[in-house]
Image (tube, rainbow, N blue to C red; front, top):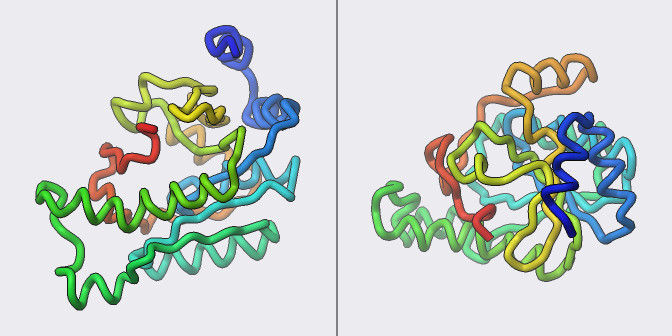
Amino acid sequence: MDLQAINQELASASPAEIVKWALGLGKKSILTTNFGPGEASIIHAVVEQDPSVPVVWIDSGYALKATYQFADKVIKRFDLNLDVYTPKVSAARRDAVMGGIPMVDEPEHAEFTEQFKLEPFNRAMSEHKPEVWFTNLRKHQTALRQTLDIVSMSSDGVIKVSPFFHYSDEALADYLQENDLPNEENYYDPTKALANRECGLHTR
């Protein structure tokens, strides 16, 4: 796959056109979401064209009440083909006997991230075995994402498609408004802690 040529071809395409291109590959697809800010955009863009695409949510058990309420609203609105993956260690158990959430600069944080994000995510990918992975990465978010593009390839050969890759926060907000989509900004991911920090999913 010539990623450079594909990204040049899709550079001026709309999210809907990018999704159509990816679905047109005829490969097994999944969409991952954290039901965080702006996530209704990627869900709308994909399931409007193919409602059968599995939507994978890694629910750490540490999401805020507002996030769970937002997720419930979006799940019902789009009748998502949802598959929820949870850690093998519950948030309540970790809080009770493992000291809760470590600070991001503590060595224990890597183990926490593995338990509550990476292990369930890897389990989801192993069980679904996707060939195409829809995600809502955007270029300006982190230093790592600035090295990627609309279409990139994971280390294990999965085609990663980010239809909103070149969207600014303002453009994404416009998309949500134009399509009458809900948004939830009261969101916190304890495995990232900081908005410009990667948790490890997209380094694979």
